[in-house]
Amino acid sequence: MLRSRCSSLAKGLGQEPGLWLTTASRAQQAGSASLLAAFSSASTAVQTPAVAFPSWQRAADLLKAYKQLSKAQLSLLVVASAGAGYVAGSPEHLNWSGLGWTLAGTFCAAACANTLNQVYELVPDSLMNRTMRRPLPAGRLPVGHALAFAAVTGGLGVTILATKANSLTASLGAANIGLYAGIYTPLKALTPLNTWVGAVVGAVPPLMGWSAASGGRLDWGALVPAAALYFWQLPHFLAIAWMCRADYARGGFKMLSLVDPLGKRTAAAALRNALYLMPLGALATWVGLTTPAFTVEAAIISGALASTAASFYRSPSNGTARLLFRASLLHLPILLACLLIHRIPNQPQHLQPSSQQMWARIRLSLLPTLLGAPELPSSSSTSCESDIRERPQSAAGKQGACSLPEMQRYPFVTFEHG
Image (cartoon, rainbow, N blue to C red; front, side):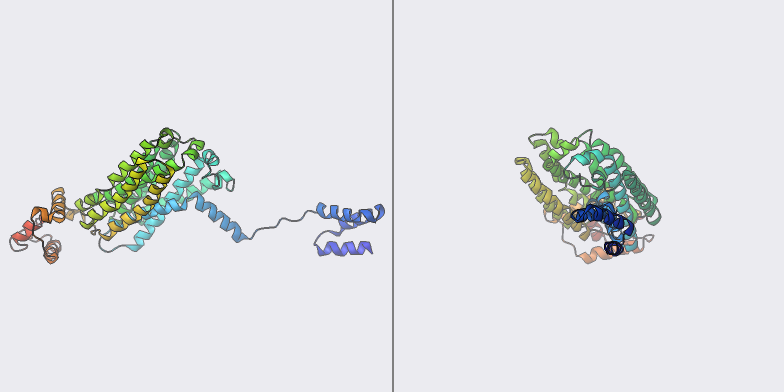
């Protein structure tokens, strides 16, 4: 009776009945008191097969690890800045397909650089609270897997930029991977100047976007979004460096906040670079990138950021640093959005204004009242400029094409073609 019940029970559990039967025989000889213990030891002796997680769950865990390796939020910021550069460098009609391919290639390149950064900083990341849960220090992925991911994303990104954009854009992307992973990352353990080198890395994506939109050409207008990204990063990351200075010290990084116990040098650097953002609107107007309205808007928007940096300078603390950090998160998208709203479509190189014409554009557009210049109807400008651009080889500079009063009012328009 006991043998038959053991055999049925073993079959019901999907296990071999032999072990159960042997255990039952021994228990029957030892007495019923040890029967329960014998069956318990038999059940634990049988190796239960491991429960396999569904494949979709393994895929989800892997995607999560890839997201952390690529620092998805930081990579999306890089993509957004490249997109702003692409739109700013585009003619009147935007090439949406080209924009999409440029953003995809830029994201892959950024993911490669961020992964290589984490491979290099595996030991410091394991010591810092804010990074110890990343895939490599947490042991969720081996280093070889991360290097393979970096190779695939980097190769794919540069290939996309080379085939769907142009060689200059691909070269900028490849160079930025090297600059971030090969120069900026090692410098973090050597000198506080790493923050300024990192700002150069952040200024390259707008140049990539501009190059992709303009067919491999970098005009003076490309400097505006690049400079905006460069100067913006310094108050943004200096605020982070102050708030996380204890964590950076545990990781062995050389940050300005670690050699500045009072915080005055850190806050002064943040304030100085926030102030540098204010005249970028005038620069954008000078190079013909935007309408004059952006000059005023950029000064106001960047002035608000500078005010939070001034608060940080007056009283360096985690609270004022956090205020500056949050203000920087609002500042950049608002500034870039205003730039794109007021942008002037990019023109072929032979129609780019000269420096004298660019200065005249600022003088006549920003100070008409002070200079006593008459206010001109927009239709005159439109008709005159369109007449010139539609007939570049005609005698546009001769009398009759545009009248002398119009030429005096619009000295920044090219009236002669040679």
